[in-house]
Image (cartoon, rainbow, N blue to C red; front, side):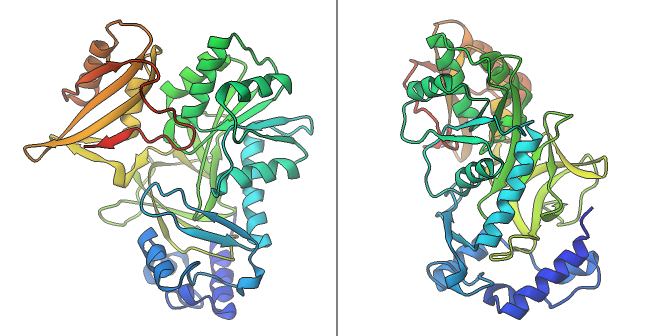
Length: 403
């Protein structure tokens, strides 16, 4: 187990010694205990980081070393707020690659004969590059799939007999459905590495992926943030649980209302202190991720993966509704392809309705509407639209539309 107190004190000393302007004004030079650390060190929020970048353009002042030491650029996806630029030194970048190697190992990928297909267009997003480079350092054949149509990607996967596919749960569902339409099979494929959305730990999504790709293919969830790097990997023995990489992070799971640590079995917000990404360290960063705390085998586990984001919760007639909870219900229906949630306001009340793509004019809309009622005790209208009507999702799916 990592000595978090020692690692935190080493990091505190570093930011003061090297003159990290952002952190040295916020944190002490040393702490006596983890309780002391939590009492005297304030939370860091994404708004803090955004404000710092506005004042100290373009990269902010959370830089431990001279700017000339930084060689890597990436940016947040803009899921909440404007994208934030982020830069790293080679050493901090390597620390994230080491975390990604743990993700690959948890997925059962260890042989130099592995061939991993990365089914996304490479942009300025950290997860793409770190996953790819970690694979090459492990000796795997890393195959980029950027700038290609879905059918071309499948043909490339077939041609090169890939053993693993890396993408979002949504896009892996899309590719799996298309592969069945084209009559393509992948006997060498043994793992799907999915992230970017909660779906990888949702049983209904995992089951759908298994049906599409075959029982021989493991669905392996993991998660991370641009601000922190890779944070978790799937528990190899218990799908649907994510193990926090505590060698790289000092985690807290706090009640969002009281900011007190929750007990095992309770849900709270994941708060992280980065221990090895020293070029741009974060102390007590509020990730906004809602998780369920569990300890097993002396490890901190997120039971059920990322349950949702705190700021994504919508209150509908007194009922808390998370996007991940909607997806759990939708994915029970194999005949539903893409879907979208439309949120509106009527008489100062939030209303939801769903649009679903279905190949057949069956009673899917009625069945889904009944399932949503059973789940939430809410009447949520469901409309069936023609396949291809809704936008395809390759990166993080954006299925929630406000009108």
